[in-house]
Length: 282
Image (cartoon, rainbow, N blue to C red; front, side):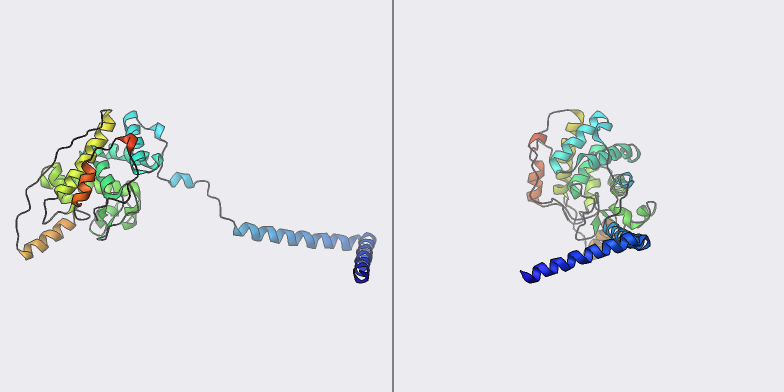
């Protein structure tokens, strides 16, 4: 207690002496104030450097749009896909609008483009298959480098709009080469030694669902089943050559039968739960 009292008394005397000295010498007080202010400014600058820099224009580079700005038909499609695939409506609005826009160029139904996108990546712009197919449309980036050159290079595969445009071009080439939508889908998925019926049925079923939503029709409960003839037997050397050619047109192998049954089952938009796992064929 005695030591505490004496320490407090000494501290009080020192404080009083300092106050008297600063009062008697204004220059010392001003110098002390400047020193204290400089220390506070340094602390503030150091704290500002540790914060994340603001970027007011970041929203301009986001692939997103307000759904209510779309035409009614496209807005319905974006809303339905958003519920089924658990993806925000804003980025889906851009993809739906782009699919409708590019459909006039490639002469492909926009709902088919969206169906391929849904089956390939479930609208994940960063998806990648084990064989290297990338992005929304699961295009083989290393094979179609020439198509990405117009978008700045291979990294454009992860830009949703660029990937959609390149994928639509690849799908157009496949359909033209095969002479039918079903044959084009078979080439797109790279079915070399199989008929590709699983993949074709899955995409076409989703195509009919999206088309029904766009047209305001009841959701279909039955879907046509496509059974293309099995690919003819070819010698091993020819098979390797065919596989190389198909790789240039497609991302990955066909889906399995279990995924096919899931795709053909009715999927009303009001009851669209999130699937347990991604249905990527790759």
